[in-house]
Structure formats: C-alpha cells, structure tokens
Image 1 (cartoon, rainbow, N blue to C red):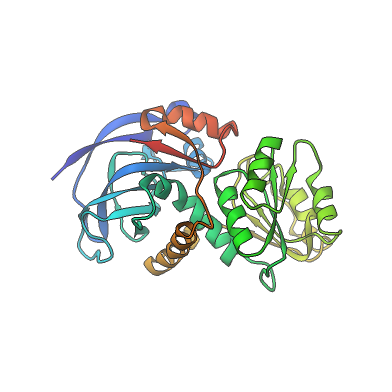
Image 2 (cartoon, rainbow, N blue to C red):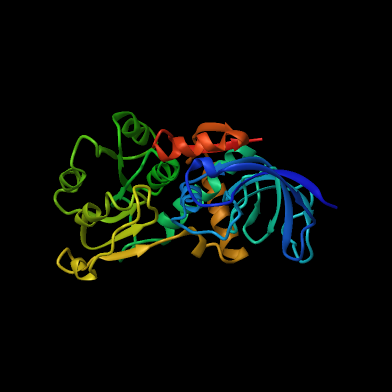
Length: 330
C-alpha cells in the first residue's frame, strides 16, 4: 500500500526560501523499519545546518530530525514497536518534516501516555542531547553536586532542559544568554546564575562567581563567537564540550594553546554517536522520560508553526527570536 505525505524538502542548499512543501508517496516499511504518522515535529539548529550546506546532504533531501506520532506499519524484525503505538524519536536520516514517513526503527521509542505528542516532538533531540552532555560528556573525575558548569544559550531548547536537569543533579549551572529576558528565563528554569553576554564579559563573571577558579566543564553550542573565551572559563584539566555552531563553525586552531591554559580537554560531541544502538537509545530515552514525567524537567514549547510555515520558522530560529523548543504542527 502506498499513501501520500506532505513533506518539506530542499533541492539545493541555501536559505529558508529553499524549503519546499511537496506531496510524495510513502510505501510499506522494509525489514527493521516502521511507518509513522506524525502528530507534531521538532525544529532544531541542525536542520538549519543541513539546509544551508554546513552539514552537506545528498540532494534532494527531506529535512527534520525528530517528531512524535503513531506507528502505522511495522517491518520484519521490529519487536519493540507495534501498530498503534504512540512513539517519538530523534534519528538519522533526516526526514521528519512531513505527515508520515518510513524510517529505521532503531531510534524510535514508545512514548509514555503521560507525555503528549507535542512534548514528545519538542524534547527528543534536545532532551537526549542534554542527557548525553550532563551524564556522559564529563570532565576528569566527573561532576559532583555543587560543581559549577557553564552552559551557553541557556534559554534555548537544550539550555532550558539542561538548566532544570543540572539543578536536579545538584549542579550549579551558570547560563549565558543574549538578553535580560532570556537570562530571567534561564534563572526561572534552574540556572544558578545567568550572564547576559551582550552586556557583560562572561569570562570575568565566571571567574567572579567561581572565586577565580573557573568551571570544570563548558557546554558550548554557539561555536565561533564563544570558543576562545569558553577555554578561558575553564579550570586546569577542564573540558570544553563543543556541540553546535549557532554563530558559525569554530576556526582551525593550534592544539598547543590548550597546554598553557591548564592542560585542557576538548571534545566535539554529537548526539548521533550516542544513539547508534537500540539499547543505548532506549536507556537514554528512559532517563529522559523519567525526569520529564517526574516534573523535574518541564519542556517549554515557545513557538508553534504550521508545517506550511516552515520557512518562517527557520528565519526566526536563525534570528535568535525563539526561546525554548519550537514545533511544527499538522
């Protein structure tokens, strides 16, 4: 059986104007695959990178990395999902900007009844990112309650989840954001401190907050604009976890600079290294579902756009006009 789906694709890399709404046929799932009908779709900065060509794709390509909906069909060998299951995912390959799709089942997880489709779509990629950062991307000796961490873009989708989760873990998260309003939002969501980097030097403030010692780890999704100063916020043997390029990719640099700054560690982390198996994906998702179901982490959906308005959604995301999570509705 073949059904049709409204889907967003690009024929060439470029700006938001390249996003086209087209109707495509969707067939039956093969071995290891499912077909899912979406109820809500998540929007993420990685979608912008793939659209622009920073992360080149084989064209034409449908965009989108996360969504939630109902399983319509199950291929051979898939045992953890059944037709009719509520489900959510963050997954390669791209293609979630659509009404329905056939996709690998590995990273698709049953969505607990207590979590809505909108929340599921909004939280999977960002929530699993916060999970692997705070639980797996750790400095020497790990993190203990009371430790300081610096988190850039703390009022964004990942940042608001991480701020709440860090508080639940007993960490003192220092968040940065670009306005007083965004700083207030980070503080309201568990950040111990918030720095408006548009108005003050975040390195000086971090040193002041930590009594001159610096932080054990910096989580940085901003990239080019914050990289060097992020290194200066670290204590000796500290870790800079770079996981995004919102201001552009980090320029090439000499590794030798890490020595005089305190024998620092640097990693370029990505969610997709952590969700290569069904077991690891499910374990991370279970951790996320538990912390959301308990109320310790609330998922803030700051913006909703119809699928047909995806171009505007991308413009607003790139212009830093969004807070929390953004979803596309069907």
